Amino acid sequence: MKRLFVILILVYSIGQVYSQNKGKTGHIDITALYSSMPELKAANEEYMKFFKELDTNIKIMEIDYQTKVKFFNDNANTLSDFIKQTKEKEIKDLQAQIQSFRQSAQDELTKKQASLLEPITKKAKQAIKDVAKEKGYKYIFNFNENNILYAESSDDIMTLVKQKLGVK
Image 1 (cartoon, helix red, strand yellow):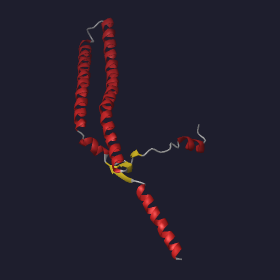
Image 2 (cartoon, helix red, strand yellow):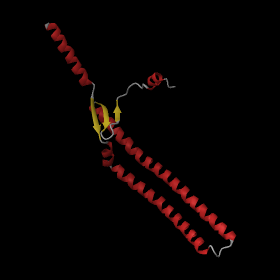
Image 3 (tube, helix red, strand yellow):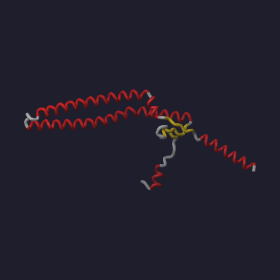
Image 4 (cartoon, helix red, strand yellow):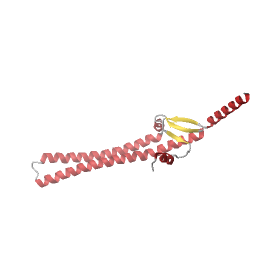
């Protein structure tokens, strides 16, 4: 009976040592981390400068559009049919140009934001990874989103899961 008790204690002790060596888990509020990085303020300033530049161009185009519409409305009764058609086409073309510019500007703003934030997120994630390795963390979760931000290398089971699901 004593042997069984000693064996159980030994197995329990080995299990405790093994579970302690598995590593720690940690968490971080990555949004708060980004907000605390000085690079974010500079990126926001550059983004706003670019935004204002695009916005100014749109406003200039809109003023031109409004001027042409006002001229057309004020003088429609005195213009020849040919001039009316020309002015109407000019107004429609300008309207399409403004719409196209707005869409392009939105796309450019999205690209600019991504290009400005990419080095910040890369730097933050590298720091998280470095701390995790230095301090023996196996997993780091994003506190607000419960996302894994770091995990030690593991097997990619994508192929096995696809096989299980019958997906090619």
